[in-house]
Length: 333
Image (tube, rainbow, N blue to C red; front, top):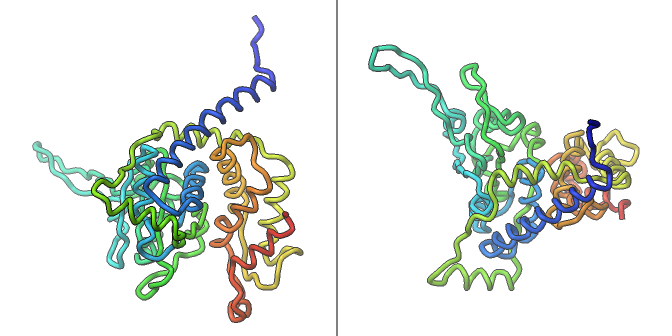
């Protein structure tokens, strides 16, 4: 008997059905998060895109804007085992990764046993990550890239899915350690958390000071998130979107002919990969069957701003990264 294969039309039909199903599920997740987190629709969207793309996010905003609550809420709603680490100057790598302890059995035999640290969770919140020393910050490098950690020469895989959502205060910089470029590049997005508008703050004021504050409930499971992440990689991307991603990312490099003189160094190939996954994830989140150039334009800032640096002259003239990115994406429409 000859082996049967699905036709392209059948495959497309199955993919469309799956996108519809997962898109509706994600709409429920977004709605559930929105009932707890007020006035941060763009932040919620970008954080969910990061998780769907299988990446990590750096949340930057002043205290009191709900960054911690956002991470906790998303962890609950998406059914993820979440852990939190408060980064401080005296925090050691072992406080994150875990350590080996020498134990003696009843028979007198001694052996080392590995005690897992908080990194062995599905959603790790690294609160005020820039307050820890570079040595401690670097403990997350292998975990974020390889989904595993090495302790005493032994490799320990991390649970699936694994995501780091780190927070950072952009104002109080005394006693902090700037994240190295190698670690910044491992964050899929830098999400700017801004103040809510007046109507959202009014709604938050009433909802969070009443006798019964709404608590988040689980909508998705970790297995469903993993399935959605696999679906993201199956979403087709048109040639025009691929060219838009390449043109945008390459124009952010000083060596490119379309670059601007203000750029000291720019994004590498990992930025192109991140943008490709992110536009697919945004399309899925909206229930669309393919990303568009509008998705590239919308996600250019969060993907590129932490992967670029300005020259000293540009900074002296008051030019910002966001202004440069706005100019770079202008040719896309």
